[in-house]
Structure formats: C-alpha cells, structure tokens
Amino acid sequence: MAWNVFKFCTVLKALGSIMILFVLAIVGVTYYAIVLANYGPALFYGGFDSLISIIVLIFFHFLLVMLLWSYFAVVFTNPGSVPHNWEPLMDDEERGVSELLEASEVHNNGVDATLNPGVRYCRKCNQLKPPRCHHCSVCGRCVLKMDHHCVWVVNCVGALNYKYFLLFLFYTFLETSLVALALLSRFLAFFKDEEISGTPSMLVTTFLAFVLNLAFALSVMGFLVMHITLVAANTTTIEAYEKKIMPNWRYDLGRKKNFEQVFGTDKKYWFIPMYSEEDINLVPALQGLEYPTKANFEAREI
Image (cartoon, rainbow, N blue to C red):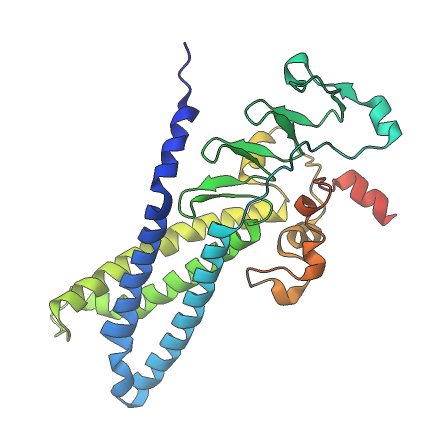
C-alpha cells in the first residue's frame, strides 16, 4: 500500500498563529535593537550622529509599516476559492468541439460534464477546477492560480494575494538589508577591542538582530529574484515545474501585461497591498475565472 505523504501536510495547520507570533517576535527583537538600544539614544548625541539616527529611524519605520501591512494582507486575504458549482463559460462552438471528461472525473451527481478539454476535476473537493487552479493539501481546498502554501503567512499564495506576498518579500528584503547595514558597525565591534556602550542585554539583542536580519536578507533576496522571474513569464512556482517541457507558455502575454496581471494597471497602487477599483474588476478570479491566454489576447488586440 502506497504511503500518502500529503496526508501529513495537514500537520502544518498546527503551526497556525505560532508562525505569526514568531514573525512578530523577530520584528520585536529588531525594533528593540534599532530603536531602543542603538539609534533611539543616538538622537540625543547631537551633530552628525543625530542626523544619521533620524534618517535610519525614518526609513526603518516606513519600511516596517509597509512590511507588516503587506504581511497581514497575505495572511488575511483569501487567495482565491472556486465558487460552488462553478462551470466554465463556453459558447456553442466551444461546447460542440469539447470532449467528455474521463469517466472517473465526471460529477458524482451525474450532471453532464461536456466541458473544455483544459478543465479538470478535483476528486477531493468534488468540483471542477478552473484553469491554473490547484488543490492545496494543507488548506484542504482548491486555490485559484495557486503558487504555493507558505507556512510563514499561514496561508496559500494564490490569485488574490500574490501581489501582497511579493510586496511582503520586497519590503522584507529592504528592511532586513537596512537593519543589517545599520547594525554592521556594532556587530564588528564585538570582535574588536573597542569599548561598547550598553547593557549586556542590549549587546546580545543587537548581535542577534544583526545575524537574523542578515540571514533573512540573503534568503529573501533569492526568493524575490525567483518570483520576479516568474511574474515576468506569467507563471507560478507550481506551473514553472509542470511546464519544463513546454517552451511556449500559453499564458505569457509579454512582460508588461504579465506584470499588470499581478500588480494592476494603476501605478499608484503598485507598491501598496491594495488594488484600485478598476483593477479589482480586472482580476480574473473575480470574474469568469478564465485567464487570458496568449492566443486569445492577441486576437483581442487585432
């Protein structure tokens, strides 16, 4: 009997709020090291030190607000669920040339399954799956344009929160890089004979904050570069693995259109975890759950 490892994916649900608390704990340690232990007190030194402290603290707090805003947007935003009894939109011609789903993938209630060949059926959810939709074994549901399940945000990353996830990575990289640079001189002082001011707890917290933020900056940079590449090709982590043998990706509309599908067309909203009203209406997951392909997109442009 085959061992189904996916049954054990539900164990990840137990992490729940623990991961959120862990993220907030890292933020707390970093905040203490930057604001309370180092650059906050330096505001009263006067001269150039005070100027540097003001600049660091302004950028630190701005990036922290954007990071937390993006983070909780990913955590609390539904990544995209398939409506109950969803069926693809087709005209008579499409319905005439479509093929029956395999016998094992027909509705349990016996409803006719004459559908697009690209439409699939989820045996676990007992419903049809729109294009680019995948079942998450951790969440126990089908997710629209699923990229992956992220334990850090205790949620799936999909059609409706992918932008927020990318912004979370972006601001996390900027914030952790800033903190690592800001604490670098303090960190190096540990290994020199220089006298270091502050209580032992301050020194330990500063050392820990530097190591953590440097590690996150390097790791998040790799994820950020990877996802920028995926956005440029209009694909997801799952699809990138599946389409290794498919040189012409049908959803690749060109870098500009691919970017706008994720971030929207209104530039004012590109760097905040929100969409304009116009862009919300363009999100495929909120309409017919059909994603434009290269072929039909070029046909509309003609």
